[in-house]
Image (cartoon, rainbow, N blue to C red; front, side, top):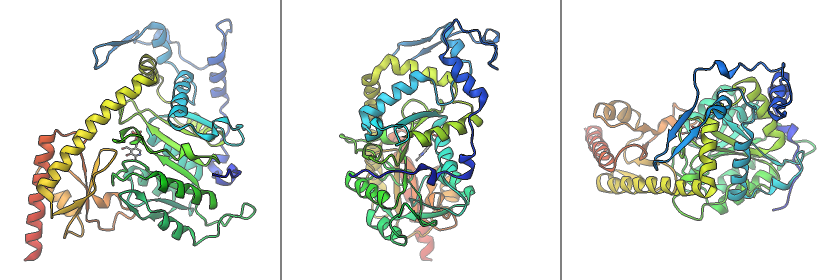
Length: 435
Ligand code: PLP
């Protein structure tokens, strides 16, 4: 793909543009890099000798242990650099290089060189990305339906959400093209103000739809992003939960221009409670995010970063990917169990596509125009919990005939019982509506 020049200033909101380096945080970064001979009377860090924790020993599922010794524990309990601790950043940059080989890796910083920062879960990173890029009244393109957490972050910003039609392979490029044809392809000298500037998508195992974009679709979407000068926000927490290999190339891997911000998450593979995510994207934009971190969390918990780092260093990339394989094996087996039960109980009552990634089965219930009542009242009282499709509609008032079922937590036996209960409810509902 031919490379286009980016003008990052065009995308930045007034709030984000006004962010300045915090002098205290800059000092912390300097301190981190100083040799031991430096006497610091500068930092506002508390003295870790006063902290009640001394060391930690974590037992892994394979029976081995991770020791966080006294000196490391002091570091883990102390303030640290806003972008994340440097060894973890290096480890993750290496991972990104190997998995995505982003063209931007070799660019100069101003041209959009690949940069990475650690966030408190990917949700934290995404909400900061939205704040950096979205002004009230902006048009924003996104999958419809989409992850409810994204909608909660976007809606208060007062932007206009333009839902993109999707099928089991995610966004339909022709539909995106038709929507974009309302505007002129971008003229860098005088961009149309109302033309959308960002496209948000969940490319693999979409939440709620389970949909995954194909390589061809991603290429078409990237080309449209080039034509209309869109930034692509690639929210990919289910990347590591792709059941079939080779994994589909990411938008980051195609990013010749430096127009992709990728959000990764450790939530589905290491732990959701650790709250670890990372953003990868062009340096001018990641630098803005770090300024936001400086004024909000200061940094993601040093303790959880050290915990993850120790594990990743012990494993190496090979061990990490081996672990991922075992996670994939688990979810794939769960998916197969749910599909088997759906075929057993719901054939003729509902329709679905088997997801090739992620944790969700998205089912269209035949003959029911809105599943809200069925799920929120009847299913709950019949002791089966599901999410009604309307929770993921851009306009939550709109009805939805869909239901999201997750195969992450319940055993195959429970999944089977759950779908059996759902089937009886649908049958009952249909009888009622006939009378
Ligand atoms: N994006 C999507 C599509 C998700 O499904 C989730 C969590 O379910 C998140 C982001 C947030 O993940 P994290 O735990 O990394 O904040």
